[in-house]
Image 1 (tube, helix red, strand yellow):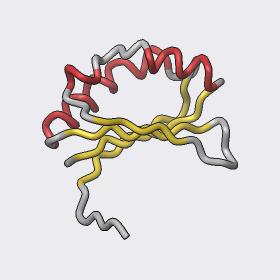
Image 2 (image 1 turned 180 degrees about the vertical axis):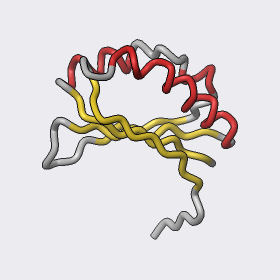
Image 3 (image 1 turned 135 degrees about the vertical axis):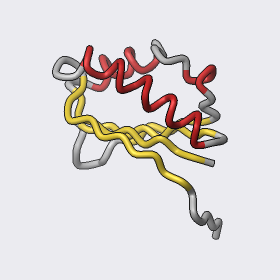
Length: 94
């Protein structure tokens, strides 16, 4: 499994969530099998999204699609975007 991690500042959560829920890249069609949204307890102006994929090619294609969309909303709704593709090296349930 491969994860695309997206982290950025937001102007407000409700406005950001509405844009996220509009799903401009078509997450399911892009191969997203699961996603998680995090917000650091001490930084309510930050969101971290993890999109899980079956393979790295889907993650890379989604990253490229997001890089086309983000310039249109950066500075208005989101700020300081960081994208990373992560490969799970080990997972242990205790």
